[in-house]
Length: 406
Image 1 (spheres, rainbow, N blue to C red):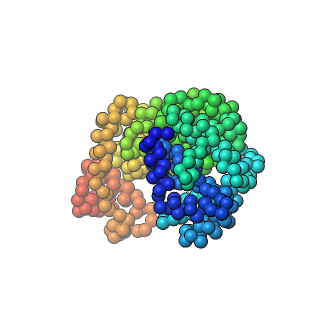
Image 2 (image 1 turned 45 degrees about the vertical axis):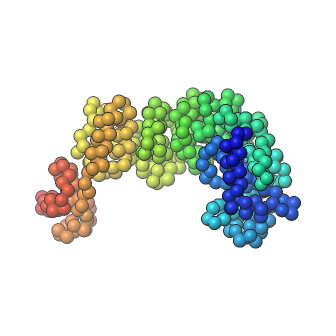
Image 3 (image 1 turned 90 degrees about the vertical axis):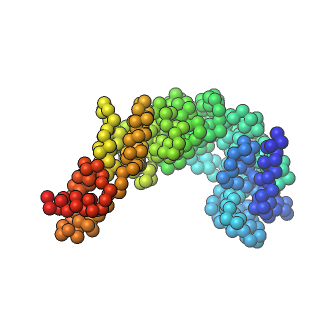
């Protein structure tokens, strides 16, 4: 371990909240260590989002000690040994050491234990099995440091056995490779994922999308998705043919390109039916489906054109589908080599002034409440777009009045 890595570990252990929590848990024959992602990321010099603690204390004892010290203790998963301890607003997941009793490939029955090595070796990947005790000793039971040094994601023990314990680990393998790995995926792990692919069908759609969402936003997502597709593991997840070259083209795009729903659309959408399939297959949220389906509708509306659309046509689409959906669709269309022209259209669309008339304005002109109100507004907006989207309220209201009288 180099000096910089040791310094970062020392700084982690010197945090006041970490010192306080470990002191509370480390006495009277009990021990606690920082484990998993926090140790991994500190060694890599990357940000630490969450700090997980493994302890020999049973959940009830963890809560008793935490509350006695003035910390908030929430029994977030006591059946699996997990208590969330909140110190000065920062949450720590404190989990009793465990061993698996049985598993069905989706859920595990666990028993509490006192063996840090046994607890570490039940985890998924070697780089996630590192532990750091209060004295600063780094515990590595699975050669995770060696894998971390070469940025290799490797299953602990027999890869097929780890996957059979929870088939979601297939997707987690590719997600962690996209986030932490370099080069080609580990061959042994890849072969085990292929062998266990049937187990993906038994997973909940929410869990699949949660992993895929993180994978799509990872730094090496494009190359990793290519590897998944080559192994026959991507189509079963998205339920259709992936558009890998289009995804690769937007993978490093700033701004818009970082949003998982947009990236999902880039990977898997061409027509509206694709969005419907993805909503069902991945249990997209309403907001995610709205974004993906909007982009699909834009792609459908603009497909087959020999030239880029006029700004007036884009503004009409934006009225029905939203400006974000139109911009997202245009970005994907721009991947064919017309990106400069597309960016100019997006910029012009963004400068469209607001359309000011509302339903109240229509009612004030004597139109009765009902469907006619929306029809008048639609006709007015159409006239406003054709006129070049004038800014002034007076001119827009004059258009509204003409729509009512005509």
